[in-house]
Image (cartoon, rainbow over the protein chains, first blue to last red):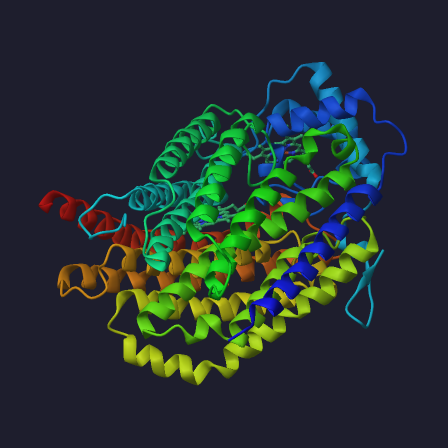
Length: 133
Length: 447
Ligand code: HEM
């Protein structure tokens, strides 16, 4: 038998720690340093509405039928990306986007690109199993 | 009590029947998705991958959630030997879920998305789901009454039910500009919520599985024991703090990653216990092998072992840097949702439909054949996804990378194996699902 008092003790400790941790994270995350352009947010909205993430990853997260796009902006350049958006590929639909929508998506991809590097080759591995960039 | 006999169509059973239908259709979407990997552009005009993936993932996630609700609804009544607090609330909850899920799946077909992984529907549709869940919480709390001297499974249900609501709401924080405007913040919170949400539905399922184990063994010593609670608290600790292992490569705070790395390693304790218990597990498996429900319970143990091994390995950042963004992640996701969650849920359903002790050879035979087909093909499915992942990891780390499309072309033979084994596995599941549904519907008719 595990006494009720001990159960309550462990549960209380865990739940309070969780709530403190959660609050700390909410308030301490990379707060916005510069207010993002309206275009970036518009691009994000299009990204979500067309569900690009079902086929692509950002920082390795998403669906896997297409490539990771975190740093596509700097690696491939806007013209190349525009061409993909215009024509699609064998499996990627050619979304009939207006010029404004394409531009907004590019702002969004540029914003992601500036946030960091996702390429696993840019990390170094430490002996304790942690990684550094 | 709601569950008087096998012949009554209870609301718990309605949840379960609907969930089985979702599992069956969800697998069909999975097969189509697998086919699109082999034939790029297949069905592109009507159902391209950005529709197929959410149709697949949402259907199977709702299979897990709805059947968990149905099983808990039924088991609470067995546990308290009373009716649920309100059958009316339970019925309303069912209707809300039924209509919203239908709306969600239809909206995908029309290409209407909210575009967030796993909950890819328009955020408006999250509202009824949250409301339905609150009804479930009210019903649960009122039915259980007090936590005094409750066995571990009641604690697990309670934990799962509360954390599901919390994490579900948390996963919609992105609607607020404060969370939305910075991509790193947004993704950190997104994976904080998803990581814990999976833990919460595991609590619901493991809780019910312990209930069933107790029922089969005929004594309740385990569910009150110290070790049961230690395992439960280890699980809860992980649910709360291990989610950072999804985002090791995201440039977010370092402490999130370090904490998750350390916390994830505490799961070695669970792994160790499985190994130590192996002999006991095996001997009780032999004793109860004739019970279809028990067979599913035991095989889930093997899948827990395999997937935990994979998960712990992937939670070491130095290894995660290779596995992240590859099909090893998918192997882990499907390995756990199928091998652990789905098999445990099937065990519970076999018990709730009271097929365990019946001398009905046709159903036992279909369950048995289905059991072997699903397990063998899942093993091939899972292993080939890991192989695909290893090959992609090699590509990702290569200094001179061939183009993405050439790499995918090289992996095609493995994608074919994944597709074929996935299809055979689905046939196994369909055999199980149809014999369960048929049996249940026939018994209503006799009534
Ligand atoms: C019980 C049955 C199944 C369950 C519970 C299940 C569950 C899941 C889950 C949770 C994911 C998301 C994976 C992630 O984000 O990493 C997924 C993705 C997927 N599943 Fe399944 N699955 C099932 C059966 C199948 C079958 C039979 C196939 C057929 C080949 C299949 C093909 C796929 C594909 C293609 C994806 C998308 C992978 C990608 O993102 O590129 N699934 N499944």
